[in-house]
Image 1: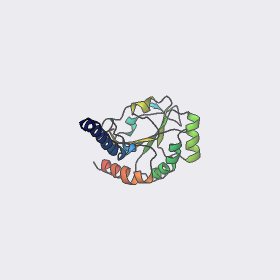
Image 2 (image 1 turned 120 degrees about the vertical axis):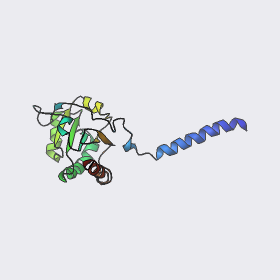
Image 3 (image 1 turned 180 degrees about the horizontal axis):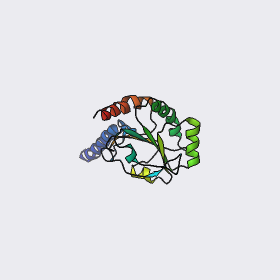
Image 4 (image 1 turned 90 degrees about the vertical axis):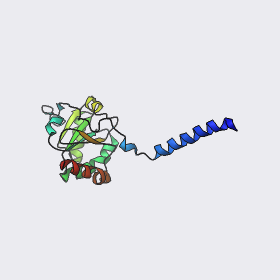
Length: 175
């Protein structure tokens, strides 16, 4: 009987960890970048390679950085939601066109509309790596001081906007 106690105890502990893990939301994975300065970059704009964009350009305002790509099916799902959100003028949305080509990225924006104030062009994915991106779409909320306050993994939905983003953006704008 005693020889079964240890395996049974280990089995029960594993079941507890499994139960806890099943209740976690995979879209809200803790990021080591939360409450840290947004990584700096200066890169050409997707629509105009002669112009650059940098997070420094956004200092003093709350903004979103949405990482997207033309080859990303989930990004296409998210696109109409971002279009509606951008029309509400709640917050500036910057795009980060990730591991894409200029013609394909611009085709999406020309065909489906452009929700972005500007889009940075990250052809080799280095900026995305610096932000801890491991899949697209991902969206970051960045405060007036350039600090990352929230990261959402996956396509933004109307529920995410009303339940998570707008309350946080309002709080950051009044801080």
